[in-house]
Image (cartoon, rainbow, N blue to C red; front, side):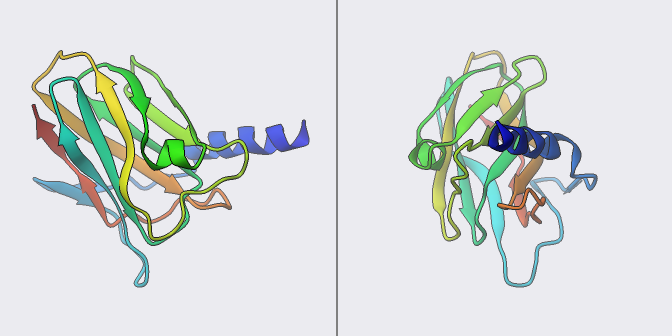
Length: 153
């Protein structure tokens, strides 16, 4: 029960711990990254009903949160999230997606590939990414170097 409480606090920290919002440019957003670390989240392969979320990280990732603007997310599958036993939840009204591990698993440093594939209803011509947060095993928000902007399908 105590371990479940710690994970509950971790999930809450994903929602409330980051007070810095990435600055937006025309094609991407970024926050100040550490000199020895690199973290990015971008769009990969996409169709009119799915899109791969691609991560590149030099840090262990123990949780993530981001918002998808545009279509309504109907599901998610595969990628590092599945490989390392992460649970993913979303709110279809707000577009917020969170990923976490109740077992304490991490997506290890050096991972470069599909974080998860998102499935959606074809309601829009753009899928956009906002409000990205990654956390380390201590539930501390990590600096993000690159955040993809939007993709058309």
